[in-house]
Picture (cartoon, protein in one colour):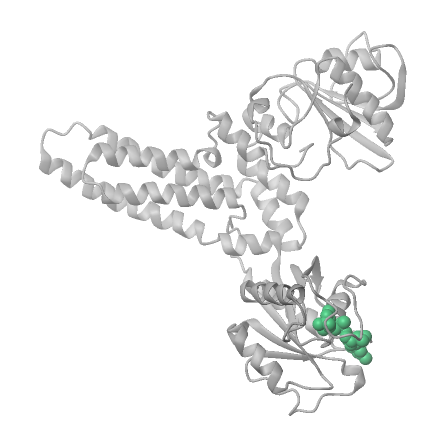
Length: 476
Ligand SMILES: Nc1nc2c(ncn2[C@@H]2O[C@H](COP(=O)(O)OP(=O)(O)OP(=O)(O)O)[C@@H](O)[C@H]2O)c(=O)[nH]1
Ligand SMILES: [Mg+2]
């Protein structure tokens, strides 16, 4: 007996260890919308799809292709399951390139389970994470860059990430990788043509010329690799860590920025112990948006116990690696020597630290109290009344936009898998640049091409492709 949980796996990320399922050519099924709403859409893809679609909809005559029909859906046992919309797409004119069906069932978890269970008895298995997209790429309905762009489009949190994903979907990134692939391939062919040198001098001369071309391709790959930091920030958001002395108003500030009570606030110093994280999209007064990942931390002081000590240690560590630090100072007390001491111990460059003087509703801090030599920017805010928060948000959006600036049409790589592949290919190219033998040079080039192969439109190595898709969500 199949358990509900095994059929309706959560739609979040889940890493699949055994990739053999991706290599099968069977029929697969999964919800492609979130479970819990009034309607849930299930997608089926593979060789059994047409037969099952006819059975479920009781259609015996011509099948309407790519057209929604309203039908009584019956299980193979004849039992009526639902009245719902259904659509059949005939391969290759479908998302995966195979025969595909979609069923818009009423969103009952039990109904969904009954359907999946009945299909499983007919030999149709639940799809693996990213398996529909994997099949679309395997059948060359889209390339890997575009499939990954769809995933990023869904995860977009700001206008910048949306635009970047849309450009990738249109083929911008595919072209960048495709051009690199062509240049590498043409160099590999040239080096292989000359492998059979009888004259050592000619070989050396030829290698020297090929290495000049290699150097220019290496620069192009390094340039693309250098976009990762910005690309990651665009997609994942910049990291903002809030630090300061106990009771300074850090958690209140996080809550004011998020717009809801996320972190516990109290008059007792030492309230926050562990890091409280929250992702949000900030919009400035001109309408620009930027994604930030916020972290509220434990107040800095000589810890009362090991748990608090660990919390403070984690907070300091987070601050040192953050894109920006908000150093919150209680505006009624000012920036005293204790705060100055902690700030200098952080050893963060001043251009990455913003002093935030809190509790502005209790009276404007005097100039001497606001003194903060170690920070480049300072704001006075009240989390209670909202005073100064809009100005701080405007600043955070401007700062984020500057950090993620992109030339029109410029491709930024956003994924760790792409970054690792580019680094690997650079390693092979560096070996090629140091070799004195033409055959080794050609072999290194081949390896460099292989590392980037999946993004250059090569679908011959299905195991490597499956690995990339196994980190997608179920239903994609
Ligand atoms: N009047 C006023 N009180 C504030 C403001 N912000 C925070 N407080 C008060 O200051 C106290 C401490 O606030 P928290 O936000 O918990 O301070 P914290 O820096 O997170 O404190 P720890 O987690 O203990 O380090 C609470 O009593 C808050 O109500 C503000 O803008 N105005
Ligand atoms: Mg707190």
